[in-house]
Image (tube, rainbow, N blue to C red; front, side, top):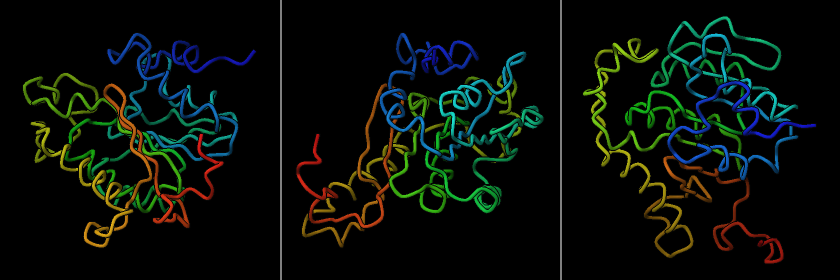
Length: 244
């Protein structure tokens, strides 16, 4: 019998279940979006590996089992996460804010169909990753997910994370952990504005939208990238019968 995503998360001790977002963590939201495509052949990238002692890269193993026909990739700044590659799992060690490093990953793999940012949760690095990956690395119609948005409100400097949290000591010293929610809010609002204005007479002033939808759940956001041939005049719908 096929295991559910929740069962796989519990099996591999992934922190995506019962993580404070809800009783079942992020699992119901992922299940809602991923279940229709779970058997497709996809390239999936997760930023933030955090291998759990005795279990390895928990979430990557969870995704491998849940998506039986897909290739799973991970990015982490901590070299402790090296050595966990296996069939259909490959991990790159590097800084999520390093455009050159991310470009090397793209050059090796090509396009991703799903990108999940569960990395540093530092606003500036989250945005740098998006800027490097969304346009160049995400397939048309692909999903880009940002987790743990509650951190975007917090001054993470006060938690002394460089000394107490795995991998954080490797983040460059000039990167501030003092998150300002306004930075993330401005980033999100600029994406929403382009989407909202795309079917109005003012769309040329705001620019062509990068996304067709942005869906928020507690502590996370799902963005769907504009697909090839997106029609501004119909908001992408080919015919009304496709609306569900």
